[in-house]
Amino acid sequence: MSSVAAPEPRPVRFGILGCATIARKMARAMLLAPGVAVAAVGSRSEEKARLFATDNGLPAAGLRLHGTYEALLDDPDVDAVYIPLPTSLHVRWATAAAARGKHLLLEKPTALCAADLDAILATCDAAGVQFMDSTMWMHHPRTAKMRDLINGKDAMGDIKVINSVFSFRGNEDFLQNDIRVKPDLDALGALGDVGWYCIRAILWAVDYELPKTVIALRYPVKNQAGVLLDCGATLYWADGKTATFNCSFLTNLTMDITLIGTNGTLHVTDFVIPYQEKSAEFSLASKSEELDNGWDPLPNKHVVMTDLPQEALMVQEFARLLQNIRDSGSKPEGKWPAITRKTQVVLDAVKASIDKGSEPVEVVN
Ligand SMILES: *[C@@H]1O[C@H](CO)[C@@H](O)[C@H](O)[C@H]1NC(C)=O
Ligand SMILES: *[C@@H]1O[C@H](CO)[C@@H](O)[C@H](O)[C@H]1NC(C)=O
Ligand SMILES: *[C@@H]1O[C@H](CO)[C@@H](O)[C@H](O)[C@H]1NC(C)=O
Image 1 (tube, rainbow, N blue to C red):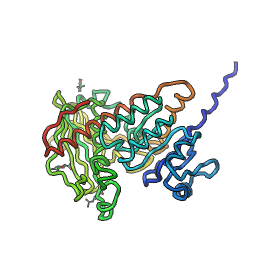
Image 2: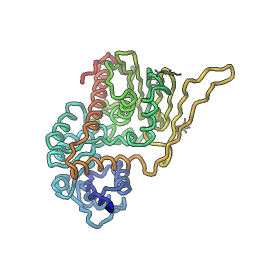
Image 3: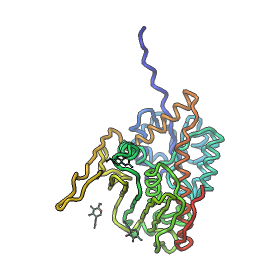
């Protein structure tokens, strides 16, 4: 009996809806990821779509350029759309995409509030399409490696304290003009843009167990339009675990996660975007003793290699799920919308606490 190699599955055909800066990185990811093709670009004019395609080296053969978002959504040869539009436009365009049967890879923050996200997820559910938010670091093999160490228990023990910081210092132009500081476009400001990652990191660390209560840090900084530039919160679980995060457009570039368990402490200092594309590190101090002149053993440096950048791994994983749905009749993977929703629910609670001058707010699922 001779074995016949299974044919390569048909590639998943992506449409890119909107030509935001982040879409450039994603266009490259789609070119790198196996099993994926960029089929169409939709922008507010065909000229802008064309410019985006040439700037990003998208092969012209078979590529369709659409001068409206509707035209891209009506394109029957698009299986999935990637939406990098400003957050205030997500409900409208994400529901429109899902209602037309397009699978959905949505930029974060996914919505202005959990109720808006629920409208998007309900449409995806009804249409039987896959939903995933575009949180790239979730797909880095380093993340899986850290997960294994946490789950193994012995190295970390029970995690009790979590800290996460994501900040970068925006220049004057950014602080005046960027989409992310405009109340009508991205009203959640730094909380939505960078805080999203910290909240996701915290939930990831506790295997997505929602905290009971959140209390915003005092003295959040807002711009004149009331958009958050710098804020944070402490999250409390019923069993005594706590997590604190800071997110900011005002302080130096920082991407930290610290996990402190009963047996060990884990540090990552570049969790959102690794320092380098092909390898990433974290350090773990496990069961170290304090000596007169140092620690024993010293923290262990773990290095994790990857051939593809994390954003290409994300696109590849998304495409794999779509192929399962298309070719094997699988159901959409429920894990991704579930963790998006938890992130958004915690974000809502932090926002509510900020709005109430740092009063405690219960997290309601
Ligand atoms: C911590 O490590 C010890 C071994 O040194 C192990 O017996 C114990 O189960 C670990 N703690 C947890 C919570 O897993
Ligand atoms: C987080 O913010 C609080 C209050 O704004 C500040 O006191 C603290 O130093 C910050 N921590 C980090 C790690 O940035
Ligand atoms: C800002 O952060 C970078 C990267 O973490 C660091 O190398 C640099 O020294 C920091 N700059 C200042 C002024 O602290």
